Image 1 (cartoon, rainbow, N blue to C red):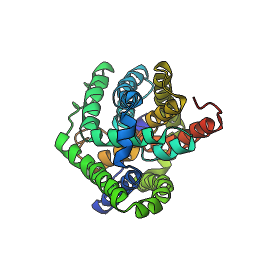
Image 2: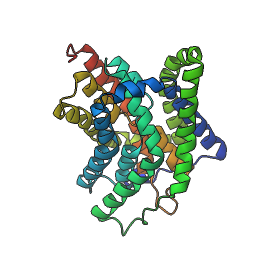
Image 3: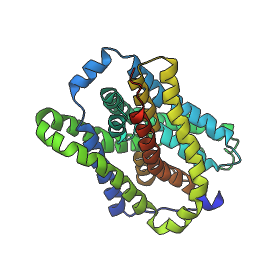
Image 4: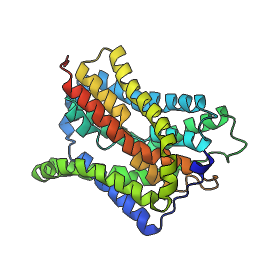
Length: 310
């Protein structure tokens, strides 16, 4: 664990600007599939939307905090905070593509992505502060790590620039330039996968050996965490008895997180000024972004092959 936390990632202004531009570009691509009338149709029957918001913005951060506490002694505090940071981020930018592949409710998926992204401006810093603070105190590590202080305005500005502006521009493009939006939408969905991997390589290029040495250990932690996220979505949808297409969407939306935003927050804000080495957070967040593509495609394929549609 000490080896993991000792990983250091430093980017110059050019590198950080590249990551920010790339993330904003990806979010613009996500927004190209959002049309205002989608929200009208989905909110006529709001049950699944409300359940999705509950899963993503309440249950996932809360149960992630509990999981991190249960893993105390097996993971470092920085790894636990990394899990909570990922859980506090909005839905991932490829969840709409995954939902389409899974024959899920794509309109619900797009709505939940848009809503969680819009609310992330406020709820991502709040959830990370709230559950991160609870975790540090419950895990009895507050004496070793400085008090968690969230520069709310700093984080708010970062999220607004990286998510809010591209989201608005994408919706406007779809509304007034539909042919352009249709031409760009699918290529950008695939490109987003390549882009995130490039972000990880750019971030960890100088620490690649250390990253590879600890990946087996990180793999297990992220596997358990991602399985929890997927289970929350499917479990809540099953208990609430929503249509199976909606359960598929809730599963994918809760299991696919925008970990690229987590990387940008760690590398581009003063979120961890004064903290000890926090390589565990970086590696957890980076591997989450790669793993949820693998798990998401796997789950979507299973759903696709399932004959159950009701």
